[in-house]
Length: 138
Image (cartoon, rainbow, N blue to C red; front, side, top):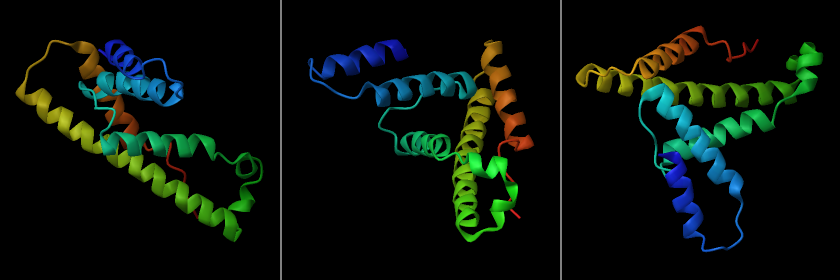
């Protein structure tokens, strides 16, 4: 499905130059969403766009200094940085949690024999419950 969507979006550009990173990111993310939740998102969906933005922000604003010198977390600049990162992570977990609830409701109504989707939903739920990616702020 995503390959057809990507080809369709490429054809819409009619040979004009454009940044393919956004399209590639959306398509790859949609493949993961389909595996975890059993459905895909429209590329223009505001919640999906916000998730992609949050993940990009988390990955691009990574602070090696905090990893090397954890005591820096007590300085005002890093406290603000960590508080912002925590809010962003909570937004990502909220998106995942809401979609797990939605996909669980859909799965209970429509019995599916697709073992992989059920397994991925279980993995997503266990990751969400463990909160292994959510740093503790002191």
